Image (cartoon, rainbow, N blue to C red; front, side):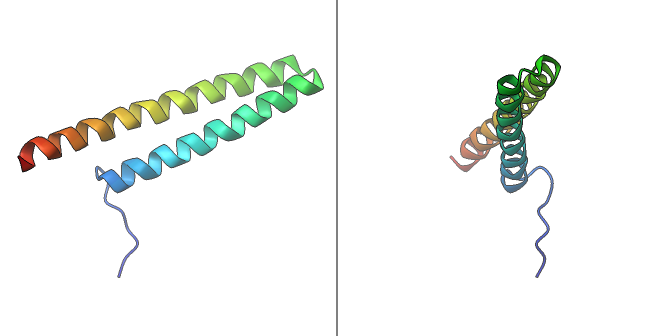
Length: 76
């Protein structure tokens, strides 16, 4: 038995969303820590990374929604 997840499947998209959301959480925490420490450059960098992770998660979520809508229309 293999733990392999095929690309283009809902499971793979959910894994990508999970990774991007975890990255966003990490960068949000780092932005807060840098801000508390008065590190402007670090805080701004962490915020840019947070936005990038959030955009990636949202785009993958859109792909997952589209995939689910397509599967539902084919099942009907």
